[in-house]
Image (cartoon, rainbow, N blue to C red; front, side, top):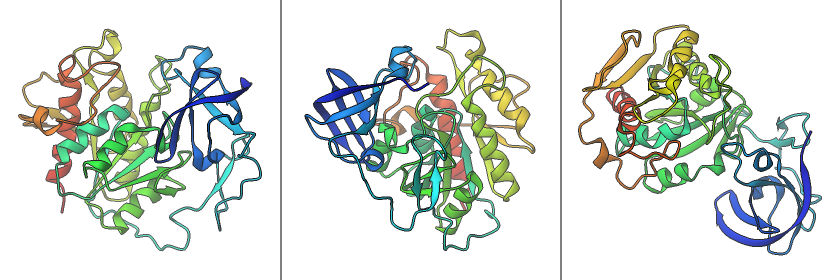
Length: 327
């Protein structure tokens, strides 16, 4: 069941591309204007309060569901006919990049970094370094709207990411694609040097072996391999996570590797002990990663580089491997 309530916009806190942060009757709320239309102070709205009421880890705010003041009778995107979130109350038509475009059949070695967490994206991109054309592909497994990510906005401002692609159920990217495979092929057709795939902020998790959003990394790796790209895994590892299943190399990594249908390069920062099952891995000199990441938003579960250096160094290593495979 949806948990909805009627309210009024009592503050507009911030407007950035594709996202508005609001207060509705004093409670924090986010709105996606490209979905629900513009929003202004005093508007009468309906908000989804379920995540906040359940006190979920990523549910510290409500989500605007409908704007009764100025969000009714909105017209669909011109020539759009591919439904995102089809047959749900939030279904909306999008025009996808595949339409009217002949895509190649191969990635011809294009490096594809596969992340199981959104918080890996910034250090991965720092590892790739300046000068490379990087496309970001968002996969289902966390937040679906690309525009929720402040990290991605910072990476674009710094020139680390050129274009965002919303694949599958994800939405609100610069480009929308029906599948991960076609998103990768579109990036290859556009001449990008590296593709970084990740789920959006937050992660679906149950504590079970295969019941988590991080498995999207395996889907991306399999698609990249099948299309003759170079899949590179950003290893989730931690020295600061109090949960045993995520201490050292996370159990998510083992699950991802079990589902990969061919070898994927697991990048590992030299100087740290790796478990013997993490194969085939490439050990990477990551000296200077802190300086390379300076100014980027680095945070994972409330921990930064000082509290959990291994987490960020491991992701940075994946970016370094990708840079070495640029043609």
